Length: 161
Length: 423
Image (tube, rainbow over all chains, first blue to last red; front, side, top):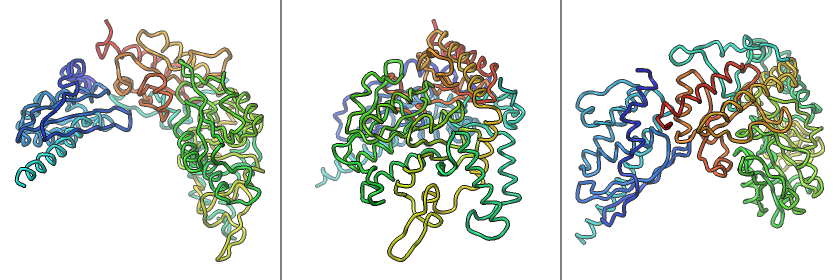
């Protein structure tokens, strides 16, 4: 398999063509967050929205446009983390970042299991210029979750008061 | 006819991914340098390096001579008197130097001589819709700071400047018209004469972005009739970190400086300072001397090849890339295939591949050893006008071969099937 084929694995092509979670969904939960991220090198952008129920991501949706790597990465993220706990989201985020920094080498089995389809992005790590593409949605997720947690804690404090 | 110059460029001999030979088609972004440039810089640094115009010792003399000799070489390339060439850190700095000078004149700097540059509410600055950001943002900023209005010459659906409303856009209140000599996306060379004629009718200054023209076609700024022009070293086979502003001497002598420091001054007291004449008044501080020497060597190298020969060679490369790209299903060439006259399009081709993002196109090219530019090429408004966020651009220089051009077209032909977007 060439480096190019390793980067554009079939699972990535499939996600790019039929993306999960695309189309922003209205969130009425008090703990919600939304993040808009732009890849300044190419102008690609994503808006990602989350809603929390307790410690669970109850809603995860996005809208955006970009290259196959960025779009597939957001799709995989949505499929992996919609309905999961915040703890799982944090661990998966860290594992994906580690994968991007691994220069094309696989991670340990535990983190590979956690990443599932996202391990297909291993080849991107060989191309520093494309790591930003793969991370675009993950950065948006991290930011949206920070906002949602902030909304959640202030709502909780409000309840106490 | 252009000589085979490949051997002059050591970098072109390297291999890239998968051991493939390099097909370098990103000269519009930055060009490779011939030995003549690398050696001129090395010779200067290993023999004559010293403080320019600041010493009485031998090295200071040699360094000053090399620095000023390079200025003369660059001046010759663009058909200008040597005292009309100002060294800058690049074309961006050169354009900012003019815009900031106008702003300083507006604030009262430069006295009565600088009155001609003053601008304010009720005045207009005109740019075009296809400018590189470097020749758009400084004018946006100047308009915002002075209260002048920013207007622009639009492009048509093909991305070519539409001059049909030129007389309305370059209105009698227009003070500055800033435009590119050639689009870095479509490659189309601007009808400079038409814009200059209208600007003169209304008494507006003209500022030409010549980054894409000076390295590729014969250029004489005095003959073009513009007032200022900017170009950079690294796109004309020279070093990064150096560029030049050309301006008509009487304008340069009247334009207030906007960067201040040592070396550019006549008399300094604790209260005030008087400036030297141009170009020195715009060159405070220590200049990029070895880079300027390299840029001078690049100018000599291009002149030794003959700019007519360079232009003819690149026109042939343009033809192969543009006709080839336009003939492919699902590939949109930005701008016309070719104009009514030979040489009216630079040696570049920017394309949008239907259903495939520019970054993904670039990756397929890269896998074949082809270096091309992907993205908006610092021309977001033009891409937006064309309904795109980005494109993939192949751009040539003196060392580009017909085989390189064919390799680009062949790689482009494989893109859609690789991504499964063909039926």
